Image (cartoon, rainbow, N blue to C red; front, top):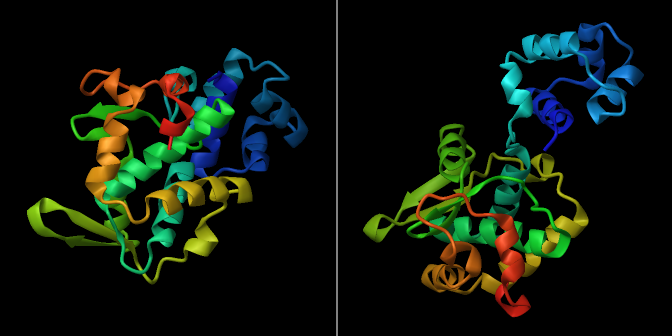
Length: 223
């Protein structure tokens, strides 16, 4: 991911418009668009100014920044598919993994771009647990405790998912296929399936799972 992609993601995550940043930089909107796209090279002074405006260290422009907005949209959309009774937390985590890695298998890029970790209980998106906690605290989710520590996740009735979700029609269709296929499966069946895929089997505990590993999988074992 380039410095220009990182600047774009940081700006979007902070809620700034291109006009606002252009004004703060003292350039026209057209010039800022070129700077953000990388068609016009940023100078050192502009990089320093942007870091000050965003309230970040300059080094963050050179890191691989995770944007969790798309991931949250995926999570919310899956929850709408199970809105009547909710979905077990572990099953939700596995469906998100399948969506992202299936998207990479078909398009050579994930849908969310978040990092997945190799956990004892399977692949887990890095922002998943914290996002659920935040959504619960914000009243966006209901979390019911089941037996043996399991949790059932359901959207709050007050949360307007239609207003929040901006996934494309194609992205929704890809998620629909996976949710429909696994809707009646038990959580354990889904866990067993992901445990037998090369991405999880090829990584050590707590290691980042490279998306590229899914390309080694047989087509019938991707979802």
